[in-house]
Length: 402
Image (cartoon, rainbow, N blue to C red):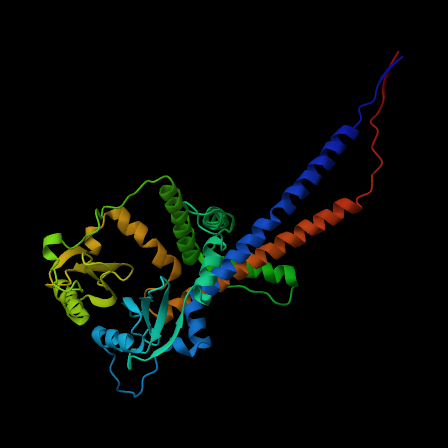
C-alpha cells in the first residue's frame, strides 16, 4: 500500500520564522527613530540658542542708555577695549545680525589664551566675557557632530548626523507618493481629537509632513551637502576658486626705527573704504592684522543675504588689495556656501529664526508621532506573535493506491 499525505507544517513554520524576522527587523529600526528625534530636537533648540543665551545672560544684551543713543564706531570700540584691558590684543570686532545683541570682540592675551568680550555698542562698556563653549556653541556642537572631537578630519558624529539627510529625503519623497492628493491637507486640514490616540497621531503626522514640505526639503538638501563636504575634505578634494590668501607685499610694509608696529589707518577708515569700493556693503566684521604683513579684513552683506562679501585692505595706505564678491564665486561655490546659512536660518534677523524654530518643532513632533505609531504597531504585532497558540493542522484527503 502506498499513501501520500501533504502536510503544511513546514510552510507554517517558515511563515512563523519570517514573522519573527520581520519583528526583529522592525525593532531594530527603533534606534534610528530615536536618533532622528534627538537630532531634530537639538537642531530646533540650536536655531534659537543665541536668543536663549540673550534671555539668560544680561551681558550679551545691547542696552542703550537713551532711546536716541547712537552706536559707536569701530575705532571707539577698539579704544574702549584697550582702555579697559590694556593687556589684551584685539583680534576682531563683530556686529551681530540682530541689533539687540552686544558686540563680540575677540581678544588674545600674552599667555597664549584667547576669549570673547561682550561689549555694549552704545557705551563701549565690557559687559561680560567667555572662553570655550557657551550654551550656543554647546548645543550646536551636540546637534552637528555629537560633541565628538575632531582629529585629522571630520569625525564620526558629523557623518552620522549628516547621513540622516538620506532617510529624511527618502521619507519625504515616498510620503508624497503614498499620500494621494496631499495638497488637500493645505486646503482642508484634518486633525481628529475624539477618535483615539492612533487616529490623532496619524492625522498629526500627515498634516505636519504636508506643512513642513519646504522645510524638510531644505534640511535634507543642506544635510546631504554637509555629508558631501566632509567626504571631499577628508579626501583632500577642493572646489574653491579663491586662490592664495592675500598678504601685504614686503616692500609695502614700512619699517620703524624702534621696531614697533608702524602706524595704521583707522578701522572706521577701513570700513568706509570697503563701503566705497562695494556700494551697498554694510560692514559687520573687522579683523585686525595679526602680523606686519596681514591686511585688515572687512566682511559685510551686500545684495545676496546668504553670503558675506570680503575685502582685504592694506593697513598702512588704505589700498584694497583683494576683493571677494558674491559674483566672484563659481556657481558650485555659490550653491555650496549657501548651504550653511540656509540650514541655520541665521541671516535675516529674529523673525526668520522664529520661523525656522517653529518648523523645527513641527518636524520634531512629526518624527515623534511617526515613532509612536510605528512602536505601537510593532508592539501589538509582537504581543500577538507571543500569544499565538499552535493551531491544529488541516489534513488533506489521503490518496490511497494499492
